[in-house]
Image: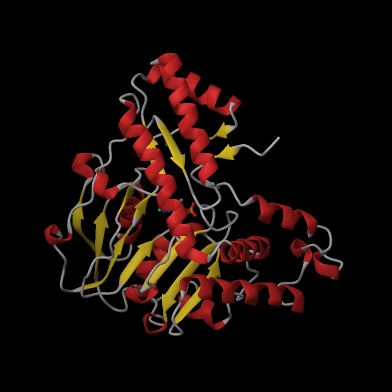
Length: 359
Ligand SMILES: *Cc1c(COP(=O)(O)O)cnc(C)c1O
C-alpha cells in the first residue's frame, strides 16, 4: 500500500524519501553511535548538520551575503512580535496590509509595540481578494511594511512583490521554498517550518544585516535577531531534530531540481485542482482568480450536509485532512511541496467520482 496523500495545512506531509532517511538514521546517525535527537548541539556532528542545512537553504534561495539565515523556535507567531521589536528601530509606526486571518494576528501583536497603520484591507469582502497596490495608504513615517503573501486559511495569494519605500517584512510560512523568491527585495522573511520545510518547532528567519541590532529597550535576548545571529542561532539549545529534518528536506529539494522545478510542479498542481473545481458546476472556490493560492485551495460543496460523507469517503480513498479551517468551513486542500502531481490527480478523480454519485 502506498502512503495516503495528506492535504493537511500544517503540520503537513513530508517527502517520503526524507522520512525513510530519518528512519534509517534514527538510532545511529552515520556511525556516530547517537540519534540526532541525542547529540549535543555544540558537538562536531550536529554542527556539521546545522552548517550543511544553512548552506543548502542559502543555495536554494540564493540568499545574498548581507542577509543572516536564522533557525529559531517560537513559530511564525513569535515573529509577529519579533518583527516590530527588531524593525521599528526607534520609529513609532509601521504599515500592515490586511489580507486574511494571519495578517490580522500579525497586526494585533504589532499594536503592542507601535502605532499600526493598516494600508488596505480586504476584510469587507471576506478576504477573497487583495487590495491593489494603488489603493494602499502608506504612512511616510512607517519603519517597515508587513504583509502575508499567502494567507493559508483563506487561500489568497499575492503573486507579485509590491514596491514601497520601506523595508518589507513578510510572513511566508506557507510558501517559503515552494518556488524561487528574490530575497534582496525584503528586510525580513519568516516562516514556521511545518508547511513546506519540516517539522513544527523550527522557524526560519532571513534578515538583512543592517536592520539588526536596534531592538526595542528591554527586549529579551531570545527575541533579538542580532543576538541570535551572533551565536549562529545557538544562543541556547536550538530545535536540533527539526533543524536536521529541514536539512534533509533541503537536500531533497536540490535533488528535485531546486526551486524553479518546484515552482513548475506546484503551479501545475494548483491549475489542475482549480480547473477541476471551476469546471465541475458543483464545487466552488470563492477567491478572485488573480489571487488564488498555489498552496492552499479552499472549496465548498453545494450542500454542507455533504461535507461529512465527502471527508469520510476521501479518507477511505487515501486522501486525508481535507476539512477546511474551522473559521471558513467547507474543504481545503493544502498542496505543498511534498504532495506530488499524482496526489492532486487522485484528489481530482475522487472529486469527480463523488460528484457523479451525489450530484
Ligand atoms: C501556519 C501559519 C502561521 C502560524 O505559524 P506558527 O508556527 O504556528 O506560529 C502564521 N502565518 C501563516 C501564514 C501560517 O500559514
